[in-house]
Image (cartoon, rainbow, N blue to C red; front, top):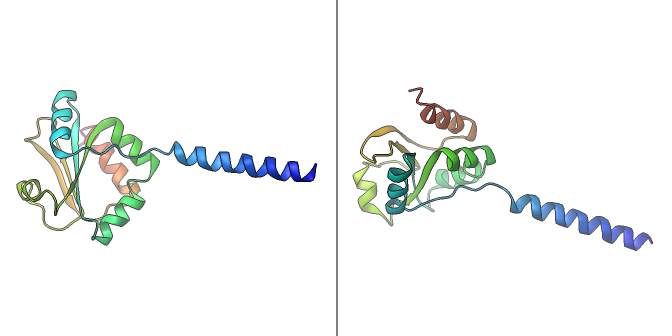
Length: 139
């Protein structure tokens, strides 16, 4: 009886941990070409994240900011998120005049009109404020 109870508790804990992790919101990243098309068609503003895997601040932003469920959910719902590796897509990186990374660029849905450009790591709380300000057009 005691062994069955331990087995039941361990099974319940395993199910809880795996299902709560599986349902965590993640950012639905697009490449530049498909993101541009989706943004124009949906009339949603586009957020472009320029990064490199070798950049420690980029890794921190991905682990802290983009894995924050509130940030990921708001970004997915109200923007078209685009992720660009600066070493793999040098043309787009140059087109946007990206220097220091990580770099964060917000564009109108016409893909021609810039809204806001900010280099550097942005913590989740600050990023949420930026997302809300741009989405609600309080700039």
